[in-house]
Length: 344
Image (tube, rainbow, N blue to C red; front, side):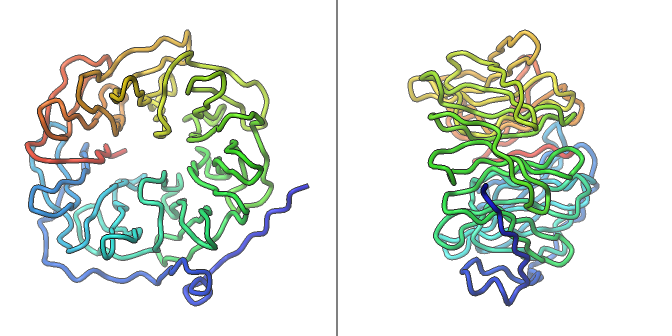
């Protein structure tokens, strides 16, 4: 039986394995206007010559720059109570660090380094921790970081890459993908890294798992049957359901609608990327954003009525919002923008 060792690291212990976790370091930056947090969209933009984090109202008004740093800042992620935004910051054009700031851009501080830049990371439901993938010991492992003090806990320790962590809605378990047994499969573990259980067993790669809002199933992407499709598996490993056939779904993380009835996914056909919605009941598929240009990087509104996404349909990548039926798309930004994240 596989035994998972668990390690809790403070700042001094982690230096030895090359992860370079750090105590929170305050950012020295010029003041930014305070932002009232409501229904807002955070995003990254290079409009001022460098990638920085911005926030705007859901209708595109009051676009406000939150970070003012030499490194590029991207991948904003709201805390559950909307009081903070975590984001990735690139140091020296190579290494990425995880930072967190108040939702108005103040009190920015570094939490840890060597994060997987485009890897999935997620706040715990109670807003005290962030689970993420980071490079250490020559491969990728899963860690959680305590937001208030930057304390890191290593949750996985295997010879194969462990990535794509997702919290259960009650915060007690984490699902993830791992190559520890040769190819990528879906696993689940307790939030402290113990009681690891393998949920899938297939020659094709299974990845990008994400828990449903009610915690009853885990959606993931699989390359079995010569097509990349969406499947559902129960957290105990029982009842595997196929949701799409011939979906050509990418490895990007599927996003559940707040009510758990639909999944937003990215598809790739003939070199073009589009967004589809998949209805769990009946497996109906609806094109949400399908243009000859890139469409991707989606985020649900908290009521599930709309989605924010990125599209290059106007000649550059910009933030759009659309109704959940794909109708009435509206561009919100007038310059290069990426990584939209709707506040909870």
